[in-house]
Length: 105
Image (tube, rainbow, N blue to C red; front, side):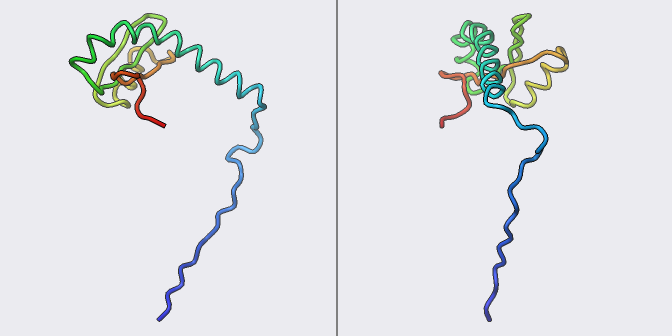
């Protein structure tokens, strides 16, 4: 008996067709993200040597305006803890390791 494996093709379309970003808007978004990371990076670099010994591969959320940081094993939990204290603030989450990122590309 022959079994047919129907392959259903899903039409590819934009999720939000009315909102298309221009290349300038995309470049601005990336520049804002990079600038925000540059504000958070010194706080992470200052604390990294002592935290890497005790909390290796944990996550650290940084709020750059106050300089406060939050640490936990789970990335979503650390973000939730930080958002409880600073509900409207923008946060950056680092991983406590040599590079500060979660993986490699």
